[in-house]
Amino acid sequence: MKKSLDWKKTALEWPLSLYNIFVIVVLLLLRYMFGFNNLLVMDLLQALLFLEAASQFTVIAISTRKWNDVKSQPWQMILSVFLVAGGVLAFVAGKTGGNIHVWTVSMVVNGYLIAMASITIFGKLVKLAGNVSPALVLGSSFFLVIIMGTILLLTPRATTDGISPVDALFTSASATCVTGLIVVDTGTDFTFIGQVIILLLIQIGGLGLMTFAAFFAMSFGQQMGLAGVRNLSRLMDSEFTNDLKHILLSILTWTIIIETVGALLLYNTWSAMEITGWSTTDTVWQSIFHSVSAFCNAGFSLNSSNLENFADSPATSLIIGTLIVLGGLGFMLLTTVGRHWLLRIREGRHRILPVQTRFVLLITSILIVLGTGLFLTLEWNNSLEGMTIWQKLANSYLQGVTTRTAGFNTIPTSSLLSPVKWFFLVFMFIGASPGGTGGGVKTTTIGLLFLSLRSLLFRRKSPEIWNRKIPNFDLQRAGAVLLIGMATFGVSSLLLLITETHSGNQFSDMDYIFESMSAFGTVGLSTGVTGYLSTAGKWIIIITMFIGRIAPATLAAATSRVKTALYSYPEARITIG
Image (cartoon, rainbow, N blue to C red; front, top):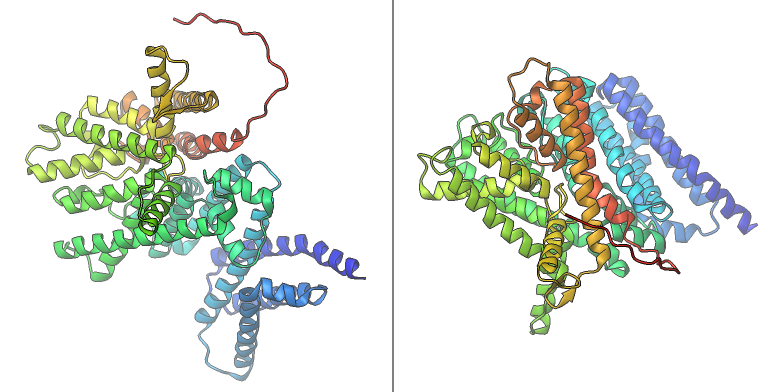
């Protein structure tokens, strides 16, 4: 009898999951068609509420382990009880003429339904992560977020005058892939609600949907299983498979702390500048938006000219640049460094950082110094002319950092010298570090290939660093990522030149090549091409941004386990050069 009841409970799980997806779809359609100040919509929301509560209590009622189920999902059950009580009160008040604000009640009910449905879907995603390829999970999760974002941006309250489906898709893809290329003005064409949607897409795209899904599912009592833990650890580039929940909590904590500190610093800087047209509320929102956008390496700005109006503010450049660097380093690296210093303080003895961490920090430091120095030298008498020495240094630092990952700019990209644009292309191709929020082929890929070149020049059998040998398989993966990046950039540039050649716009081939590389590196810098792209050109950039965001991580996740063959073929020498 017990087995029969458990089987019934299991049989209900997938229909209930489909129901939760149905709930979200219905809510989005209702929002799109009617908004939430509609009595018919309110009645439908109450009906969905009772269906949701009934589904929760039904699962518990037929279970043979009722108390265990309640203990494993305490917050879910508490929310169900309170929301049912609230729904009953709202219904009674409506029948007796009570004065309850329809919009307030509908927002609460709507938020609850989406939260409960999301928790269930997150749980299914986490279980799915243990049964399918991590690469498939990564790609499909980003695709899902982009589609959901597109639907939300198409709702009437998200924009001031409406937006085409292609432009909504482009904006959603750019935000989710943390690129920053825009076809409509973020600050003027989107309402506050639309800007919040974009900010949420940036945050989810920066951290990754599976990070949120795993954390909230585990927090609400969902079990991942060993396969799910292993696959998610591979997606996050983490070796701590036995402490995943704490790692996820650490990532979210680091994110909140850094973004909060960044927002406070920006608010302090901008409020002191007394910017014309900005109220205190505007300054707060601008600070929050730019802090999240910078840490997630998105490059989205609420200002039509990005950060060009802050070229004379060294503090702005330093704050934004530092947020970009921290986000580009990767969440696991920040967590590793944090644990390292915590253990060092507790134990009172010197501890050496892992080779991976030191390698990323070394390559990143070299690129920051190189980028800042090149920009400062080449643009000294061009775009930097007339600035003080501190303004020149701060702007050069920001431009040297943002080129690899973010896309913020205090100086118009179109005004830069051709040599600067060429070194920008190289830096955009390199991108951020593994596990970071940027795109590109990653800093470690270039670092490993440089070590391989050094070992070849010095006739060493294999690349080495800090008395450690680099496995040949890592070099093969680095070469594969490089080839995929070059192929994606080449095909994207070619197609863009084909579709835009006869568009009548006064842009050079270099401008379109620059745009293509910016999309692949999920950087967001542009010479002004984006807003003039044809529909075909927009689709090319959308696909390029998607590939640039997931391709390196997908390849790394797909090839993280090596299958050792039981046989070996004789070697064959191939002439090179």
